[in-house]
Length: 113
Image (cartoon, rainbow, N blue to C red):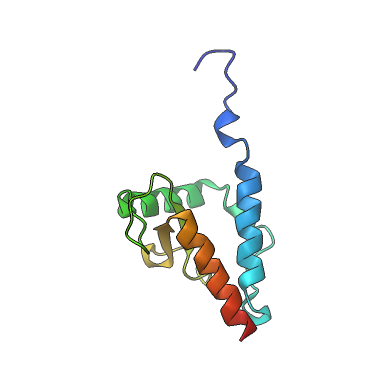
């Protein structure tokens, strides 16, 4: 990196993306399940979450774990929020954006039933 390069540049827009996903997650939960901490967005910026996320992406080996299609960009989806901060490998899954959006749509649909 040269002196005139901004070290934060790769993270431009990251907070907005995290807020978007965090709001989708929280809105998809029923009131009984709404135990996700308000600082969830802050949690997604922690070294612990980055490690959990990177391991999930590595396990996926470039393929969405839901549709099995190759994907250059994978998002990590919580299958459960019961162990936030101490996730098991089975608590998260790396999926493509389309499948991630569908997961949250399905959660919202189930909540309405």
